[in-house]
Image (cartoon, rainbow, N blue to C red; front, top):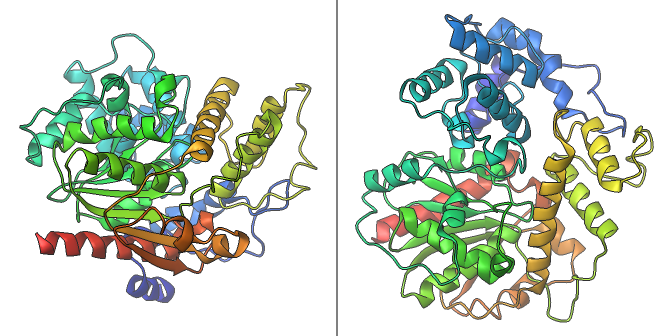
Length: 457
């Protein structure tokens, strides 16, 4: 209790642990690394002793509790338990969404899980969907069988949000060649609270946007927060940074028809956000905030488009592992039984499941879809040669990234950010930037920029 009291003085509410457990040793996986997937099961007894478990009261709550138990691998599940505080993350959230669809015939998007994090609240939402007839038409939703990084933002919800924020009223033309339906599927509302114009966060190279969930929570009600994710199906025209940016401009204008716009992006997301800002300024719009999080540009003389399939798969797997807080080594697969399938993609999937990076029910086609998105985005990144941007750019770099790279951020970004470049350096690695205490520093910096812009207006 004393330690929790101390943490409350130092940490925002969303970062407070559900429980504190003293262990003789941390659980490890076959690679000898910390098995974070096993930690919730280790701490469950103490969690239950500190947190009252309210039993399901009807068939809907009982069914949801059963599904949660299957996905999170613990029981009993109380209707007051929070999905993400009990071991939930973006990938097992996909498993839960698929199970809810199979059981009730209704589609639950990722934002709904963030906002209705307990069974009690989620059950109310499911009942409303079933009662109002907003259940599926019978076709299995794309996210239920293919790309786990893609969740369709319902157009009706987006329209209602825009109306509530007072952002409707001007119909904007879309750039030629941009598929509006595909553009709207890129938009994922992360936080509906707050007033004024939204903050838009752009996906990294993986294409998913769950990395911004904690950032949106940390910002609280400062502004509504939307994310732009990479759809699995994309035309050849959009497989460039410029094409992606044009598509996302259409998506952004569906909820905010005119500026000033606030943009943020981690890694590749910052590069795309930069191009979005360029295109919006070319359309006569104003950019209030453009924050790039450890983003970098490939030098024109560096050709990284010649990676073969094996090298691309290796990069993709390492990105997944590091995003989950692990550090891949040369021996990380040594003790994993890869099974009889010689396909390296199938073997990588088996290894990632063994390391608890991916959930057990992640299928091969899902995994291939993720790999295809990664490969497409990576190639677009290496081919991008940006033009100049006349607005101010706020760049946050990780000290580890600068130490390991010959790229000088003031040189590479400074030559295109002709409107001014602000550089902050944080003592962390690239994959720590949106986690833990470093995330709090990032959120504080971003909140100050947003507040300064609001005060100026």
